[in-house]
Image 1 (cartoon, rainbow, N blue to C red):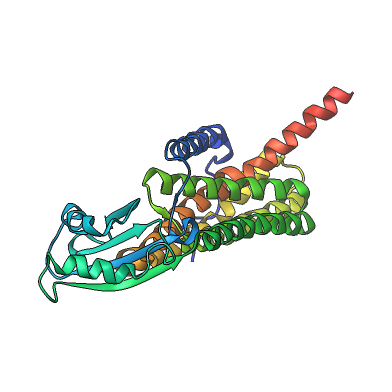
Image 2 (image 1 turned 180 degrees about the vertical axis):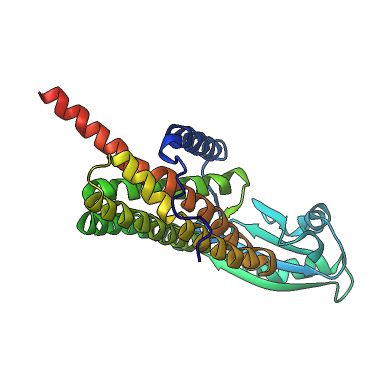
Length: 306
């Protein structure tokens, strides 16, 4: 099945500078957001602490819950709505772990019982993560992404050339930075499932990039009379139908998870939605044109030596 007719010749390479400035603007915006917020909004997984999820039968507000819980002194805590607005579920997060605040769920239940009738609420989940465990998980999550990048660099250098590997790594770093930036702009929590989503995005984006690279390598051998710029542009156009079909079907599945999967995997699915869109964009406008930029830099160096 081909959505794009053979012989189509969109000038993707000609839009390289425009794409560069769009990507730069997105990256700078994300970095500024991270600086303003003092880094990503770390969830309990990484920051450590205690999380309690409560389901109310009737509509209530964050302020009402906070006023009710003043008597138990939760310290530096946050109360926020969980999932969709009409499901009346709330998350209570505090930096204190079980060692600092024993029986937190029981104390919360007792405090709420004084303001809400019996059966008006239900404690659905209690999670406790110590600060040392949180720091360890944070470190291992970062190392997982670094190891993935290094492995990809080695693999693509072996399968193609070093210039291809550089293009792939730049595109993958581009995807991760923009996705993290979007999470910072929306003040969404950065948790272990988000690390899993980022690793999934890396794998998905790499797959798209390798398909285009394979076609560039094939065309470089069979159409030697054409310049590299034309070969890259032709290769992107030739794989465009496959890229649209793959990304489109994947977005349908992830979109179903996002809208129908429930609040637990909502952020995970959102990260994948952003990553797939950005990853498809970077395979076309970042990874492949980087080869041209690399070739241009090398040509300039050779001319200077002469």
